Image (cartoon, rainbow, N blue to C red):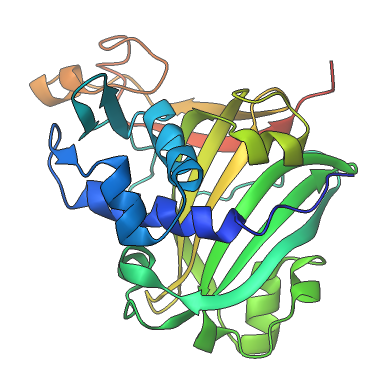
Length: 280
């Protein structure tokens, strides 16, 4: 069983959020303050700051140039998988899933999380870090941010059994309706590698999700790190009937399919399924 995270885990998470807020307020190529300046501004040690910076450099958010400093990286290409006017049902991933809470606390939202949840930066959120296990083996680390006034009386035990969305509906009358989720490659840092039982800098998948209820109110912001050696995403593509080619359709690109291959095929819809791979 993986050991508990160090007490610095939340502090580094807050440093990461501050850096992401800084990046989002800048343009590609803009410099960011030096490590020394950031350490003084945030009141953290250089190792804590450097760990967060290294993660953002590895995932392509920041660029470090020797002798010059750190800069905001170029924007990534984004490809959306969606159906017009219709939501996808996401099937449960394979295996028996369980959770173990690593950290459960109440903190201020801060600028970045507050903006995502449409609440004041000073508003309180319930912050939960939990280890996700499949058939008793560590599979992912989730960091959840939920407006505190949305879940009065929420306890750590509630996050270790059952489905959180079922809990929101049954206990608080909150009906989740839609979510926007992004997935991109990353690598594990020291703490993540230790918790999910892989070598440092192992390939991983970074998920970010913003969930809204049936009134359009944001109710949850989550980012998660899934181990890349055991988890994969499978897309089932529904290829429509051939349609007359247009300039717009010729320019479209579907993930994993060379541009132009489906130019005359009309809309391509997809169903994404998570799969846990057998241990090698």
